[in-house]
Image (cartoon, rainbow, N blue to C red; front, side, top):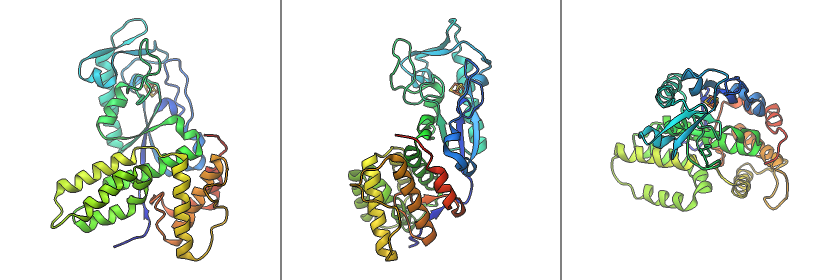
Length: 324
Ligand code: SF4
């Protein structure tokens, strides 16, 4: 079994709400630059900005729109509508634009989308509803992408180096999992070997159960079993981790790494040492770089981008100042 780290060869394509990519397409003609926060790492990805509201022909500036109904998912079922502030019903054009924006993302090969939190179109978890300012329902485009199995990242979390690190490592693992061939039990065990440590960090009871299930598999691998594995592990990888789990995981991986190489990695600190999230993000990047250079799997972030990006400058650059 190959137990080495996995490196993605192609630049991942990331869809993003265009207004978060500094395109002035919001209803008031404004935009935000969330990509700036990740510094040079921006060049590691191919970006595909889309804006369903301008694709619907609503123009800039425009009256803000809102959902009338439970959430974006209900609107797809015909249980609600989308109206602008002046009372115009824009449901049909918005649904058509959401489908067209999805087609654009598919043509680009995107399986990840960075969304604007709170938008009745692109939002996923905190859409503003009429008379209910902070609910948790998805917007109309967010709901579509969720149903289509996209890996959804909130744009706001790109501003925290630690949160972005968490999203990025799970996203890379998710993208690798979507493509890795799973035709034999050997393929399945190899994929699980790469991902199990991260899955244990994210959901330990589930990962233990999954380990037992895989160990009990016999005979030829049925395609349904392989696809169930891909789907369930993918769902676990979508869940954010916590600071406590990340630091615990970093230390466990570091201890393992030190045992194999017989030497310490400077700057990695015990999880009991109090330090800010920027320092922790930097330590994670250092461990990622060390492990990749040594050809040792870093179970906390098992899939990386091509090696040359993990140079010293990148570590410094990605440890941008921010608080959690
Ligand atoms: S949140 Fe989405 S629909 Fe709204 S302006 Fe931004 S990209 Fe356009």
